[in-house]
Image 1 (tube, one colour):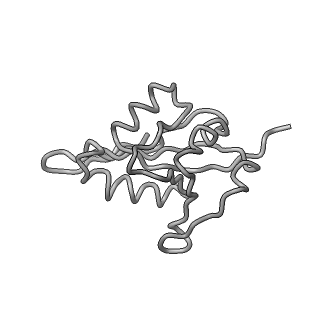
Image 2 (cartoon, rainbow, N blue to C red):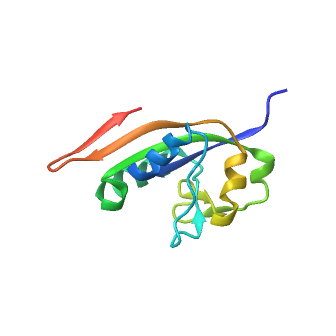
Image 3 (cartoon, rainbow, N blue to C red):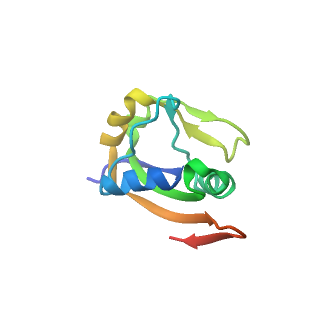
Length: 130
């Protein structure tokens, strides 16, 4: 029987990409002290908006935005409420407390995939699919 999973997305910058890569694309890195929650989002459109419009303008993200896609056990996610932080149809996410991220990672099924990449260069913004 196939496991019931929910597909989630997460926009990330270059440093977070490197840490995920170091885990062989199996886990998200621990949150920084000033990041009390981990927020995976429910749709690719929202993740793309953040990666493209925010990460590419942020030095801390290396001026790069990646969109990740991954599967999480649905029964695990049932303990969290979906948070709507903007347009109801698009801006929805889960708020996972930072101290519960290891448990969240243990409930990822399969690999974390990179589905899109955006990069800001000195004069232009570039877009790579995949």
